Length: 133
Image (cartoon, rainbow, N blue to C red; front, side):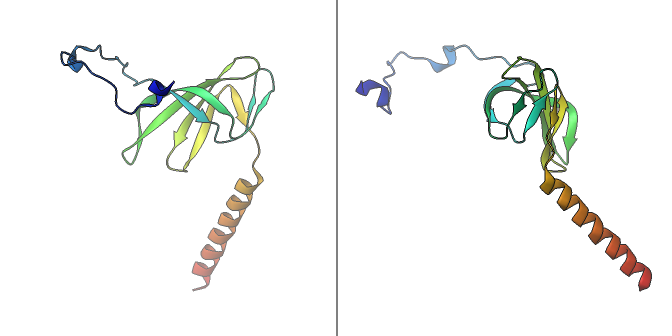
């Protein structure tokens, strides 16, 4: 039982790490990751809700031809826990958020609407003050 906890593994003297087969990735740099949902989502196929913080095994890939100020944009694929329909989301570095693309809808978040209203009010006030000056 103690063997699984050791930090150092034995490598024989004739071990050659260059002889190990390399894993090949495609052009989109696909990778499987375990990730929590960053927002609550509802499946368009069966209507099941998947809440923020639910862990999923997702497939991550680079979005070719898209970048924001040199920051790579990623696309994530995962399946509904009820009907196994596939959903996709994309990173949005400009808005520091995620955009749901296919398979589901994002649930309403009241704090997001409040922040947008507050931002619009500040912008209107600044425009009004510019006109008075």
